[in-house]
Length: 313
Image (tube, rainbow, N blue to C red; front, side, top):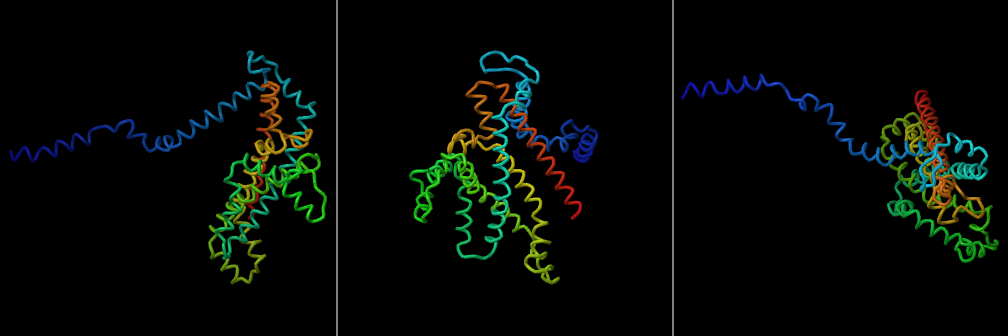
């Protein structure tokens, strides 16, 4: 019995060392990261990648959602060149983006710097500025339409008290787009403020202490310490805000419906009208692909500029 108890561990050890590693043991370290991202890749493929490919396929067809798609080459794309409403909606979108993106970034950064200091009721002020972000866009649009109403809106009531005549905010082509821009800023500033605030709080105080020792003033600290360290955050917010601006739909659809006339119709709303009001899915898909290419080009250009700037810093 004593001899068996002494030889058993030796035999087991020899069996273990001689066994070849399994397939999973060999590739586990390589496959584990892909298993973690597999659910996201699956959802991205179902809801983004495959619809994008199908939109590119439909864009070269004539399809009314009822009949079978009929191939028509690049006719949908050549039709865009002579479509005045398409260019008008694209111009409205560019003007809307140019007015909302830099303004929301500047005001968001201004508020973040102010609320990053020790103030009374600082948490309450942060919550008030961030509150429009968590409210539904449709609810925000309904509130804004009530505020800007030509007949009983609060803003016209305040203007009347100040001795200024009422303004046709939503029924005039001149003032409809500015009222939408003001509503968008009301929502976007809170989002930009929170992101900038998180970035400001991640900057180490040692940088400012070193700047003070070198005799840097407050503006110089912002110029040479804060702004360079906020550049990645600014790049992120710039890309997100441009994408949001080019994809805006619900806010304008509720407030003005694209009117009066065609003064506030954006490119996404024009795509919606072509697809579901005129049943021109091929033409709508062609406009969608043009919008996709525009956003992709802008993102690549900004990414290239940001990388080149970081190399010179």
